Length: 496
Image (cartoon, rainbow, N blue to C red):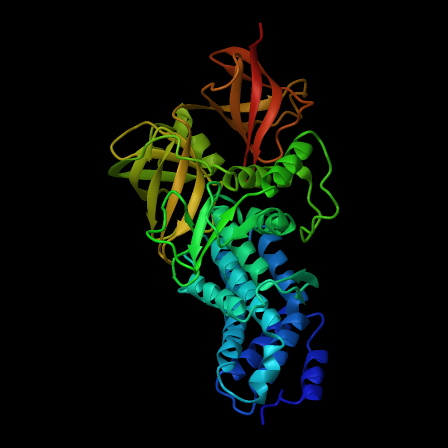
């Protein structure tokens, strides 16, 4: 008999899981999941009882590991890989256990009959586990696990065939859900196109989608205002309705924003005007409005009745770019003191394969160190040229472990390196702030400035000397903030 076939033994194992050692607790649960692959003596109903009780017992540890992955500053590549592999492997194993439970329903006998009463919860848990698997793939901007959309569709079709797809059940954190609701959450998360968000923003996007989920519409009927469709029997992910299905099938489902879009927009408007983050939104932590605003802007755009269309046509090209990462390297590249191609800097070589007015796409082989991510600041020089461009990584998708595709917004085609100081500071206290002045795209008399982190202050003007004249920079607004730099607008005035 399997060790956990006995209910009392299962409770003893759960009670002895470490409370203060996340890695050990998860390792023990994973070991039990792996043991179910070949171990006999565990009926299908007991297999499900074991799986969901172990899942609930370790959920707090999984949440803690996710927080460590998202919030620990400057994780090494090795530690990031470790946390990701543990989480991704856990959700893959758990989903596999639940799928074996579903397959066990086809075997006649009392265990299968007993399990039928738990079918809505089983399907909801399976879909939620596969959704978590997709989210962890998205954290690394990688392709989804093979066949995951077909697995998701099969779970929902099974619930629908049994008439339990919309039956309310309580799983995981204690919220009321259903198989359909869990699938809807995963589908809308896919529609949100989160490959241009940071991992923390991806997590917040999922939680916001879950909070506003009842306002989205998921239906088997196509209508003029539907935005995405999916075929539950196919392996392909949801598609925009710009790519219409070739024929109508009973297994197709459709999504439209419904009232949720207006609710997201209202929250965004409130936060942009100084409102507080509502306490009833379960975000997994305490966040200021400025952290949620870019996420909400993204969701309002991509979950709209008309999602964003490409502003500029792409043109296929094929040439190489030299790439430098970060503000300090860009400062050196744009400074006339060091020449057009400064020696001694660690440069990457990327292949650009398409360009548009707003930026370009590139293929990155031999993945660089830890710095490549959404929001990375780049100085780029076309092969054979002596001019530098300034760009920001806006999209990132890993094809595999050694190659990725990035979408780069061209921030400026010309920049000027300067050292700023706080106006009025004494010469002893004044410390040069390395910054980049960008060509003006805003109001007359304004300039955009790229600064080190935590440099912008609405109460402080900055100054420097340009062409022998003192210039003052009066703060206007902070445009963008990352862990590595800030982009702000200043009013420029030349002093006597």
